[in-house]
Image (cartoon, rainbow, N blue to C red; front, top):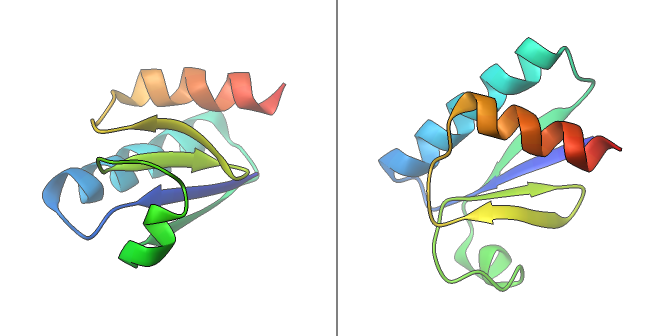
Length: 80
């Protein structure tokens, strides 16, 4: 599973990254979490607000920071 956090480095982006890392650890997933801060790359995903959560090149969420439990639900659904 390839997970990307899209954001320019704001507090919400950092919070989403931290929450996602926690969710991956709690689920014991075999996943890589990376951060994309380049605005051109972010724009390629067609989102208008950051932060965003992208799993295997599919945008699952953007514009807000969800709870760890919501991230876990999203990750489990995308794994199926």
